Image (cartoon, rainbow, N blue to C red; front, side):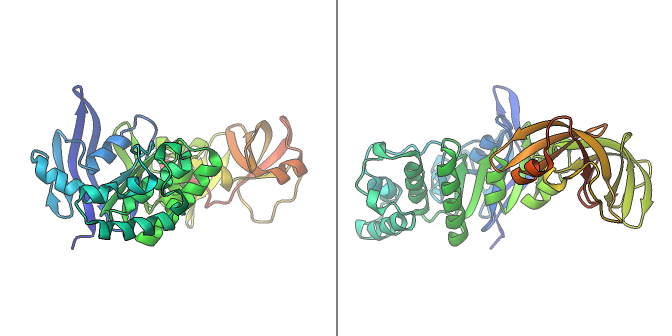
Amino acid sequence: MSDNVLEVHAVSVDYDGRTVLDVPELTVRRGEVLTLLGENGSGKTTLLRLLGLLVRPVRGSVVFCGENVDFGNPRRLLELRRRMAAVMQEPLLCRMSVRRNVALGLRFRGLPKADIEPRVNAWLERLAISHLGERQASKLSGGESQRTSLARAMVLDPEVLFLDEPFAALDAPTRQAQLQEFQEVLAESGVTAVFATHDRGEALALSTRLAVLIQGRIAQVDSAETVFSRPEQSEIARFVGVETLIPGRIEGKEDNNVWVDCGELRVRAFGQWAVGEEVLVAIRPEEIDLLEEHGPVKNGVYNVFPGRVKKVVPAETHYRVEVDCGVNVVAVVSRTATREMVLDVGTPVQVTFPPRAPHLIRR
């Protein structure tokens, strides 16, 4: 049995004569959660629908469980789609009870009632909605509707589960609870899943691997940790939350480190690069520390630069602090540290980060 549940080869999708998706190669591995991450209009929903055999490519091929999909054969397409399930942004529940909604797909497949009932009961219990079984779907909250939608999908025991922005319409507390619930269900069941989202936090929480889409093309595919810490392009870096991007030139090498001339700053970074190469120094905000203007710095510490606070923006658990060091540097600082350091606009500070914090992107 192949390790790949789905494969895409040299695929293009056109709308109104315009190419909206162009994917040379992509695989979905058995048991993984592959996240399609991109802005609105990047092509992630089109790619999700292509993998779900709902969109016919104008070029290329899609392989499902070793079978080259014939998009011209409606009967076979339906048979293959019945091995899949989906949870969408809008649950699209029918005007009937929760229990009957969850059972709907099994009834369509012609299972006897004696087989349907225990499977439905198991998922109602697993998702803590047994008490809602006889309630009309129209009377459910957003979170309850999504739990019902997930139960309706998982009761089918799908070979692939598609998730299209399932948390986008939920308020923050419900969204966090649902995200944790989905994370647990996916881990327990081992189902292969493809998840489309524009939210970085959701991508980090759920992904085994991450595919970043930019303007209908896959820009990078790797583990979520690798994509977030070592983006291959400046566009990817910005999208995954890298806010400090400084152009520079490799001016020297020392062991496994390089010195980067960034004009106002001389940055020490880890890696093997040739002297003279033009790079972007990319640093995530959580990798940057702020010290008081004359605060102590440990001996042997590199990358310590004076600057002044330019902007302080509050967030739920921290502050986002922009510092002018001759170039713009962005750090996230805990609320406690912000109060202790009195980080007001104009406050002189020291910016510091270790040599392993910067990721260098070739320009």
